[in-house]
Image 1 (cartoon, rainbow, N blue to C red):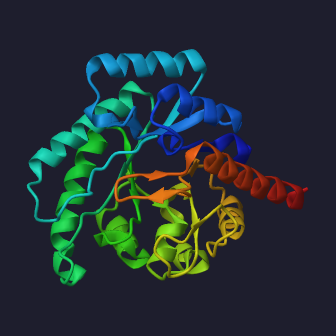
Image 2: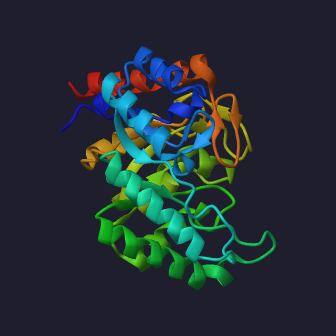
Length: 280
């Protein structure tokens, strides 16, 4: 099995707006993979052709590969028009092919604040199936993140979506901090419900039941060492993507800064080293 340390990736826009600065920080942390989301303050899906050419050339020249397209697909209201959003998904799928990755991160739609999410299940499923149909044609996997305050914020609803759609092109991103912030224990409670679908981990820790109580990996209540060990024992070989949010956690992206990101990277690498030592 691939050494877990070789599967570490990172949302580089957590470090800086400038692309070269982003890559400098990842390099300094010994990371050569990244999840693409924002470049020079602009979402990847909005980049012009010229900027995309520059991005490709820079990544190639510096030896970086792309783990996923960190798209905002599904981060709109469940009643918002669907077709324009599916056109945006088509753009994300095209970029996945362009940057040689088979993963596009997606979400499961905001429901009105005072509504019962169950009342919107059928529409969320319809939209998710429409997205998966496109992903299947493009041979790309949509990785569904358990974002807080969205339809699929609980492990039960995440599992329901995954089992109801029932496609190998829809899998789960496991984000421990997002579960913690809504008062769900990611390990073992959430992991037990979705473990067979986990294709990627967003490495982010937090304090239980606190909004914004973000901590470096292993220092919060996410039980990240136990989570990674359990996944390892099941043969999980997907990416471990650092998304630390140590300085700011917004609705569309977070920020850690160079030092915060390196702190998180050091913490994750330490967890993996300890796990490796225990396995010897």
